[in-house]
View 1 (tube, rainbow, N blue to C red):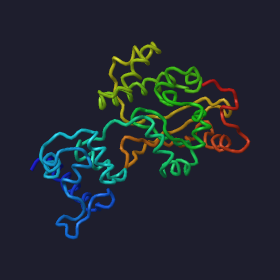
View 2: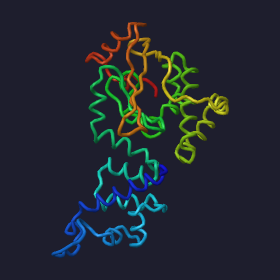
View 3: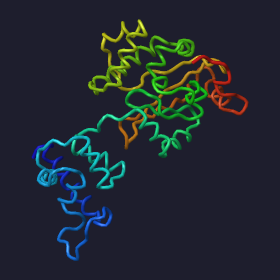
View 4: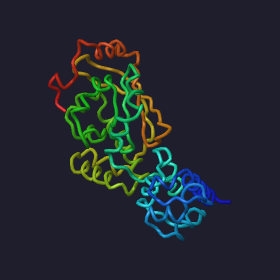
Length: 290
């Protein structure tokens, strides 16, 4: 039995199980004293979704048919799936999640325990989505890398920041190395999501904005994980030497949590603790150009 067939059988079983837990009164459907089917009937689900009964029956039978994202989203609502169940539905029907709007990840961080996890770290910690947008951070990262709350949209994209903000060249001790790594990360992501319109626009604008990016992009270097260490010139405490460690979020493999631990050089640990103390103001109060 092929993996594709196994996946369709899993989808069929999943849909049947979720249909069985629904009740007619939840949708103002007529109730009968004797129902042979626990939960809703297939024809009732098909009617609520807006598809033909035969088509939905084939879907529940695990037949090899095409299912649009719109139908899957409608199924998510009708079957009253939570976020984990929705992801499971898309994985079974698509073998991948559909592209998400970049605002979804910010909502996710603000409304889940991820922010609590970030805040639990003493050292700088950031949450980055698959487009390299910073969608979550703790106060230590805020004071180390600059005020994220002041940025919006593309200004929170790490590659865009490196190549278009003058402050990045002042802050990053090894700017060219970091910038080349940033290009390699972006290339790897573009190869994985070649139809992502947001990424296409970002790359086109970077090619217009930066001569270095135009030169390095055709080299097609690829990088999948953080390598080496990061050195930054901080306007308040001086040079910092940090070791980035990347963790994949199990429930959202498209998200990466990056924690920056201090290295022995430059007395970084003591400087980070001073930086997050009450005597230091966030960077937006220090007239740092972003």
